[in-house]
Length: 249
Image (tube, rainbow, N blue to C red; front, side, top):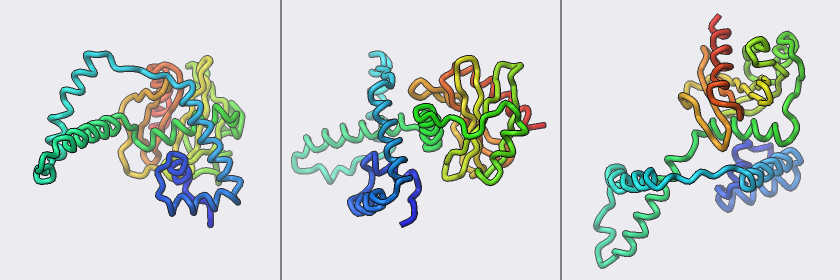
């Protein structure tokens, strides 16, 4: 059995595979050191998120407003067939409504898959110590390094005068593609700029904030980009504007 898509290993660790798929993957894991290492990284990341990720509780007013909207949205999106609940099944209806409300809340808060990819790659690099594969502030050293290692040749520039120093690059795997990641340092913050071949799909718009990290995505002519860092949102957008301006020239 060849190595599966890394997302399949993520699904296994999250308990999302059926029994047959889980058994098949466990048999592969038993003899594959690369997938064992990936599984260990995923488990380590999950443990770090569980132990140290910040948790933000909605204030009572916003929570009440959200809960007040759920019944109307439930009825509009997924009408309940009344015939299933004849015969005094009031308790079943209440349980079903509660389950649907929970599923709706989880769906609303779920990040797009590409956000999971870039956040996981950025955090895995920080935690593992494998932040940089090629270390240099010279674009003529970093950019050629990606040839043959990734599916794109990303724009690479040193913006040290503007406060964004080029420090190197590494190879990643984003959205099913071999991605090039260019690393910048802004003060005490590390910024990973991921680039992979455009798939034609929509990217998250604007600035996303997840677990203390900021994510900004944009699309070039043939390349999709996402920048990730724990720096302030406006500071991250400063780098994205510089990169977009350079890519357009």
